[in-house]
Length: 371
View 1 (spheres, rainbow, N blue to C red):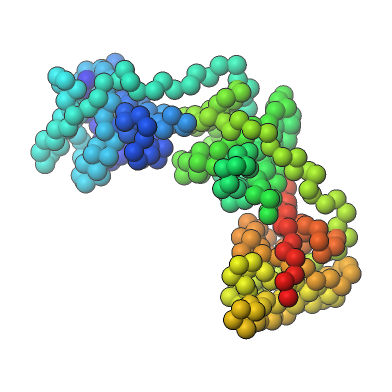
View 2: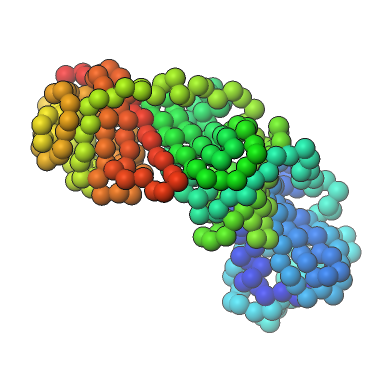
């Protein structure tokens, strides 16, 4: 195996694939990149942690086709330390690898390809095409709401529901819930899958800003294809909770408020909140919202008042300030709307205006008053 390639062009591809590699894996060979070079000059680069696999490709000047597993860390560190220039990579006896640059020659030991895990096959799949930018948006708006509790395996990922012309993404950790919907897609599918948080993080980094991608899946795996890159992941095998059952339907009280003012006020008031609960109290009344917090252990307290538009009964509700601030950061409009019913039931937070063919809804559970 021997080929010539631009050092920095190769680095770009290796960084995409290498994002899936983990330190100290169970299978030592998964610390490597798998290189497959065909006679046409297409170099296919594969990296995996067994659960997730990334495959990408680049065209190179082929001298001799072949395959090799190359230790990822030393290869990436070497190429990143070189300025942009043509390099030659060749494989000799006993999987020895030589990298030739204008500065000199570097030798490292590779591994045989026979132990490298094979990527899952795309068999018996359902498939749809989706906009890259929309998927990136769905990931950004939902991923933060996933749970880190491995005992609630389903909730550590994001539920993706395909319902003919509608695509729904849901994430929850039992304290907050985000439901992000897209309408007007073209599909004949009615299925649900749970995507692991780790693969969503990889997709968020790797997805291009423009263009579309193909999403296909079967009972075990999901396959994402865009440009010259494919990301394959094992799905979470668990039953997602019935999230619709916890979303209150009748929410007659409506608070409309400037999002930035609200968010900044929460940041200031939360400094004085109990560090164990992060509880802030919202007192909602006609044209006025009063925010307050108190830490009885240190005799700290703070109060602020903000103008707002409020339709409903006078009400006081307690919320976790950190969760509320995080959810407000998920809203792009100037104003946010909080719909409520009674102090012990969840509040519904939405942007004042929804994007065309999209709908964002966030549910936040109340914190019962401790003072």
